[in-house]
Length: 219
Image 1 (cartoon, rainbow, N blue to C red):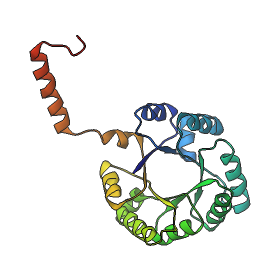
Image 2 (cartoon, rainbow, N blue to C red):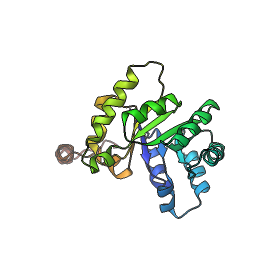
Image 3 (cartoon, one colour):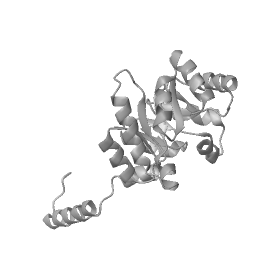
């Protein structure tokens, strides 16, 4: 499974990229707005920090404007994945950009039917939002299982299932068990993955025992 980080904070991205655990980045207008910086400046910096896909979202809702915005975003860097909403205009834009060789992330997916359409349109990624489904009393991870199963039925489908709106480490583990291709994870949740009280307890015991020997590995 690939790990993308869901943020436009370049310092967070730089820190996580240095771990070697990061495969890509997803952004959206809301995340970029939080930085208080120029939209294009932020995207260019992010694309220089990581080799993997960097999702940059269009702001238009009509096809022609969406397509023009998508082309402009794709021209920023080779690793840009243009992010479009799962609407008819978004799917049409996806098909056009995909035919031109641009990576496309179709976002705001909330049903298996929508995911089928994204694949038909040639999306590189489809982004089902599990946390938002949980918020309205549905089980978001059920959708991931359905999409993975449907895509697996058709070897010609190359669209990757990118699990979004992740709220906790359990979402990530469940997505991995279901065979999802990618999780895009808020930085705080990504850092939670490493934490376990038994790890902390075990490390403290090892260090205490080592200190008793009075030795130093570096001499």
